[in-house]
Length: 206
Image (cartoon, rainbow, N blue to C red):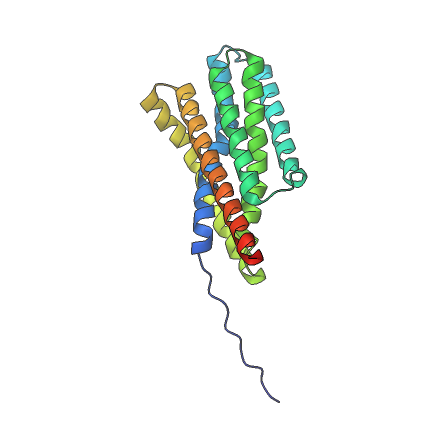
């Protein structure tokens, strides 16, 4: 009986995932800012009752679920969804830092969490979409490791920024600028991709 020759397994290449994992790490640190810091922000503004903090956290959590639903609603490439995610994260952080009332603070947190809800499925599907089936387990593991590291680093980064900049609000303000920069970079990548696609189409027609 003839034996079938063994097919050599394709080596796992980390290079394709490295950039996505870096983005995931940063997005994870931003994801947990509201989750961890909202109660401190509300307390600093005089809304320290468990009821106020609980309602705020519930509204933000509901907004995150809505953001996750946007992943199915928005029919666009991953880079476009990523841009929208960082715009929502940045805008929410800016509203939180400039708000002086309970309602506006929660509105900013909710907008931010909508971006958080959109960014997670966007990144995880982007990470594994081009991987062969037998490599998706390891690819998902690499992505989850990056996300977990961001979860661990988020409060440490906020505390470090707060000490350097003079408070938690200032640290969140810095994150607003960082997410805005991430949105700009992502948007430029979308434009560059669109321009390249258009150029290739014109060349093929010529």
